[in-house]
Amino acid sequence: MKREETERLLADYTSGEIAPADMQVLEACFVQDPALKKEAEEMRAVWNMIGNEAESKPMSDTMDTQFFAMLQNEKLATPSKTAKVVQINTNWLKAVAAVAACILAFVGGRFTGMPAPVVEYKTVYVKQPATTIPQPIQQVQVVKQQPTPEKVVAKAPQQQPVKKDSVIDNSALALELRSVYASERIGAVMKMTGKGNLTDADLRRLGLALREDPSPNVRLTILDALRPLASRANVQAVLISLLSHQNDELIKSSIVDLLIDTKSRQAIPQMIALLDDKTTNPGMQNKIKAGIESFLN
Amino acid sequence: MTDESLMLCVKKNDLDKAAILYERYKKKLYQFFMYKNYNDQEKSEDCVQQVFYRVIKYRQSYTEGNNFRIWVYSIAKNIQYQDFKEQVKMDAAHASYQTDEAYTLVNDEHQAMLQALKLLPEQYREVLVMSRFLGMKYDEIAEINNCSVGVIKTRAFRAINSLREAYFKIA
Image (tube, rainbow over all chains, first blue to last red; front, side, top):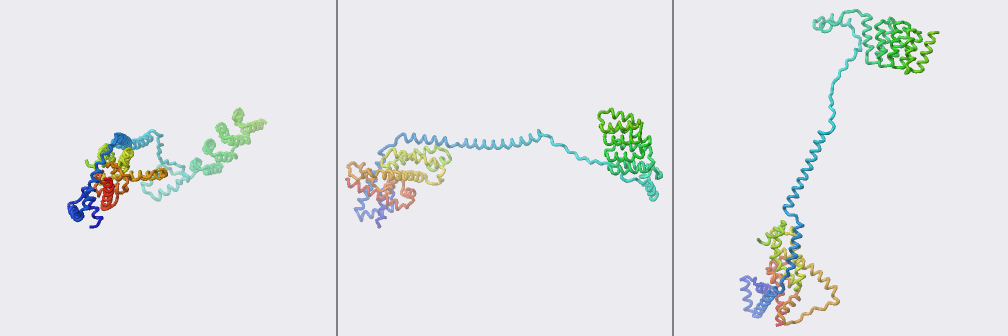
């Protein structure tokens, strides 16, 4: 047997951990070598001796005190399970509270904020005056070509078969005079005054337009158209009546010029009224004064 | 409850169980350090405190199924090793006026045995302390030291034999 194996067996023998099979092997060695047996016995004696040495110095109480103090500190530093559960619950509650606050703010803001403007869409149909002159005669002809009762009843009953005369032209011009387009209204004025024989109805319409038309161009056109006819008494009457209703200084000045040119004496009271009016333009006042003086001279 | 189940409770922050483990191991660890520290009581108690401080502090590193005794003595061994390194530094610093510690024959058996233990090489002395004073099996000591059981047995034999020679010289 090698020395190393013997040493290991002796170590087991000394500590008492030797297996029965190994013990038999070792006993055989002891028989062969009595010195080995003596060595083993001495080793066991030493083993037992150092065992007694262990009880030599007892521990002090301070070690226990220090340990339990350290344990207590560690307990305080370590959160308990209950504390963890409470902490987790608190975190959940915080999250839920935050979400609830957001929802509350959203809903509250929606119902307490400025109301959204209600937009209603409406379709407005603007009935524009006819831009084309109706042709009653042609309609009558159409009725004749298609004598279907339904169509005749549908189109003809309100219309009277009249000839193409000035009344019809004038009513068409009157419609044109109320057109939304200033150019069409100017055209109507030109047509109306271009005929030469201006009726009272035409004059009334022109006076109305001169009074109410929003476009100064149309009004000036009317004045220009009436200038050749300004010597007529009815035209002057219309112009005089307009003086007190006209707010546009330019138009008012043109009317004054027209009346002075025609030396209309019926206009003198209106002109004096304008002189007395403090709002009247000084230039116009001078013009009126000069005009009245020329009348008197 | 076994040591392992107690340690698992400690791992789950049931620190009251650490007190039970302390009661079970304080004496053995104290003896371990007493022999390591040449009967320095204060130093040994301090080392025991350090062992349990680490057991509690690093309780989460304990793996379920591991032998608690091996784990705790591994901690003790590490503490002793660190202490030993510091001691070596201090010895080097005081080498100029330190007297050589010669083995002297004394008639008192216990003192002679302590002197013999003190003069043993560290590896031998450690195996002897663990096996004799702490009641550990050779395979457990081998596991703590990361070596084979045969090596531990050889060290044990040589340690006891050295003591035997020293003791029987006196006798």
